[in-house]
View 1: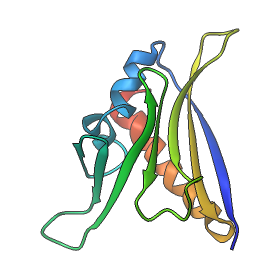
View 2: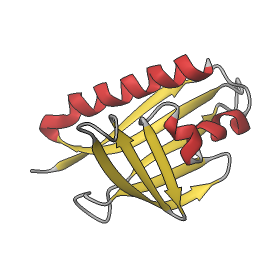
View 3: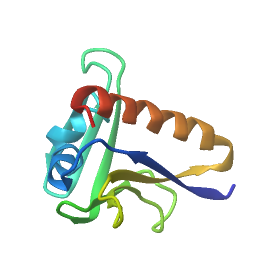
View 4: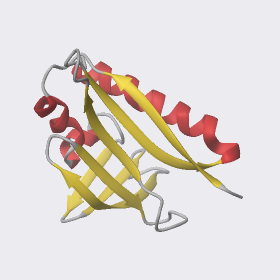
Length: 132
């Protein structure tokens, strides 16, 4: 089945890319809105959903590229191809100066709705914990 690239743009209330970077550029920030626990060991990040003493899901992702105050691109260990990744990019309008978080991910065609729903929930948590 062919995998599809998905892009979601989320407008932010923040005025500073540095504020957003604190929430996307490291494990401590990602733990606030992407997973229950995120640990970082060099270029490897381990994401855990659920409590460690119960049923839980663990996924490992590797940082493949990043630029401070701009973007973080990672690849899940279980991804289907070298061209697939997930990315969080800070975008700033040249005209208004407003910021947006642009999420890029990949999914099978029949999983697109569930991936969009997953990111929508994550972005709602981002707004709840940060006001962005």
